[in-house]
Image 1: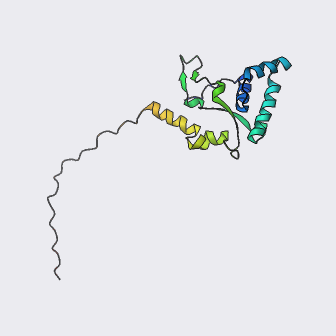
Image 2: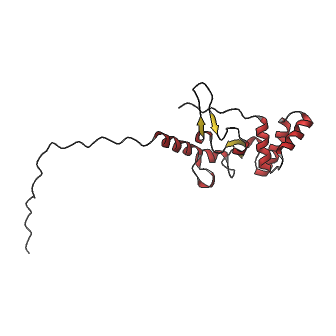
Image 3: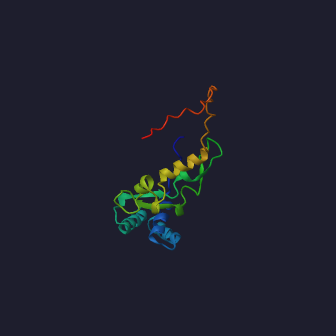
Length: 166
């Protein structure tokens, strides 16, 4: 199986994810205000990521976007081999993306969730993807019938040795 198609994440989606995690009630208004001030969202995203990093107790460079559920575990709609697949839910849905610190020393780390264990002791993302592939493949085929013996007669009860009398 080849690598999964990962569509690029637009900057507006990244801003929406950061605003959602910071508890912003009206992200549309905040984005319109940021576009009105500067015309670009890059600086606004940098400010919000700095706030989020301070809240999570890490550096901005440690933050990673995490798909939840992972793309490999989502249902894919692929109409042909030429057209890129669509995921359910969409790969760039802000409600299914989270910023997480990367290193294993952080609580709720992206690295730990992906490779070691999921949130709250669930399966890691890699284990969940493997489990879903195994389910899609179906059960392993059963082995054929056992080899029959050549029909030798079974021995009749063997004579028992006499018991010692003391």
